[in-house]
Length: 186
Image (tube, rainbow, N blue to C red; front, top):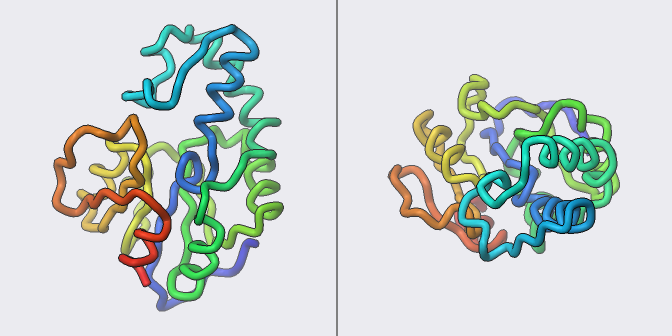
């Protein structure tokens, strides 16, 4: 549900993959189906599939399928939809994803189909460098969280196996569920 920007509300930045959408599970399923590469979530201590034996060409092919087809049917992370609906009343929601811009139509379709509210949608891996004055940000990638925290925003790092390293910035807070995120932001 795309809405117009609402002046005066603080901006909440929200990542999509593995924060709103269960993306990693679908990507791992595609690697298994297409190439017989089995990756378990608990093994994913880095969010870099090539670390686990995936070739650059395999990665390109899987993301080509993901960006055009698979991202249209992802499951929503438990608790995310209800939380986003509550947060939309208090914050201007800026979705900021590292997805390739070729996934824009599929991403917008998924957001509408799942009823997830937002005001802005950005496709950029440099989430910290967009000039958006985030009040807070919800993220799953350790490296993104710390760069965003450097801008002064509070970042809620949703716990995943690939972000288990210790937090290195005082503005980054580890959370385990969307319920915890609501406790902090509402």
